[in-house]
Length: 586
Image: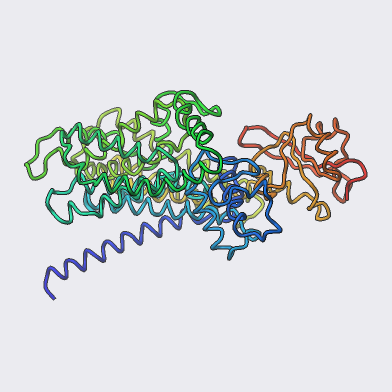
């Protein structure tokens, strides 16, 4: 066997090992809490319930079909009796398919975690795609570190367990951008460069992104292509993206669903929803989700920790490298840094200017931030990163350590609270806190000595432990957060089939917990509802039940059944009782 063959095998084993370690890291961080975390308000419960009703519409026997809940079929997502058309259907299809696979086609056996699996798989895919893109841009060490930084960032750790569209959007956008990069870097005339693989990946990613969250993926891809062409003064490469192929692929993805929607709800009505969701969200804050320009930049320090160790210096380094002359074979116009800046900067500016802001809006740009940051870590370790010893940089390192310490403190305190009566659990939390403390202190010393690779890898380990402790060990067991499951558990078995209504507490987790059985009404509507639903049970505050003259359900000791907790969606403490008309109780 020749030397070249041995070299190829060694490289293949290296790729395999790197991919497996990233996959292991993802599963180790994302799996804890996946099955134990109750349905989260509000978006997750809305997505999951709409996917469940879509699943039920094709899986329940005819005598169990409710026209109000299941009239949308596979084309129109329904949330209770209302169409949910503010998002395209791909995420609902994926979640319904996941639930169907895990239940064997029986919707009555489903659970919230089944609707989360597509997000977990998409998060893993996004990490691996970032790594593979990094292999084309930089050396394998930087590529691996970029994947790891994305994998353990707090926003990805959280969203990977959420039955929402954001992880699928991240994976689709990363795939599309990887295809765009392949077309941009290709040498004209080379079969592998000017072939079909990169354009196919690009347009399939765009099609999947459109079917996941509308215009976000096309926006990011278009701004990246335009920016890299303007700065690099090269436009001919766009022909290698096969735009005609793209038109066919995207149309094939989108047109059948648009036709189905037009035939079911009308194109005018759907266009009005699109305008409200896209255009109005851009010019005015929606549902109170507002933030000033700079909102996303500030949140990046926390949501991408520990990857922000040298991110600011990384951007400055990338700008300088794009300006520096290079031999014609590797022109500054083809530097990976130029492409990454084109991926980040224009779209980031758009997200900062849009009036409606939520922390996850810039998530499709995080792979680029991870790649540019990881490359700069190795530049800093070799002494080739300018500005490391500047005063502002040293302050930034201090802030980086402080953010890690605060995140660790919150995670360990949150994990301690629900397990404080278990000596073994408390010992486990104390051990995790000790390990995190030692690792952060070691990272501090590593930064001071210029050992940035060691510091960054220690940060990855700390972030992984924080994610496991917070989302895996703490959140699922903080009883006060999870009001809806406790409401359902408080209903006596003999009342389980009676009509149910909620006054005041209208969270979507209660809809999911009751399989869409609960009616969400106002206090003024309660007398009419009770008249139309004899024997019905109402969930409300004690004062509302008293004003309605309802008898609270009591426990075996005769005390009213009270569910106390925190409605984290509104930040309000709540106390709910279950009441019926006198004489209607069990």
